[in-house]
Length: 111
Image 1 (cartoon, rainbow, N blue to C red):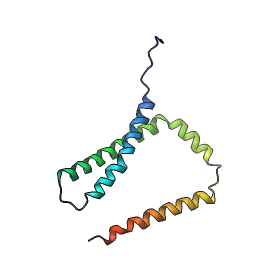
Image 2: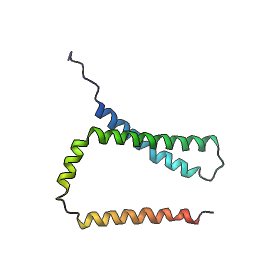
Image 3: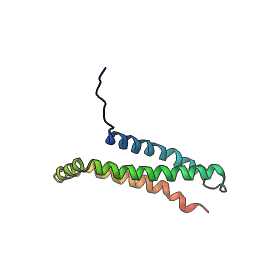
Image 4: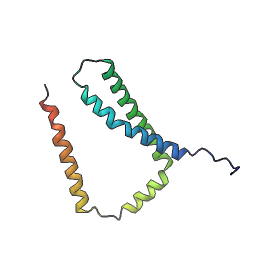
């Protein structure tokens, strides 16, 4: 048995908290969508609060994650200057923007 005590790994904690809060967002977003036309019930209020708190935690832990990994990110950005954006990357980005935009347009038909 190892007698040395491991110190608390702040980076692992922040990464895990960021991932956990991110994974909560799709479920709570779906539930918000499900309850969107209901009057403000306990269930609707719960899912709205759940989604808001998960999003705030994700944003906070994302900023901390960036601060902890700023050197790695800056080195990546310096190296990325020489990378050419491929036609596949542009096409994938345009496809995603189109699909998300097209599906989101249903919001303009709700009365």
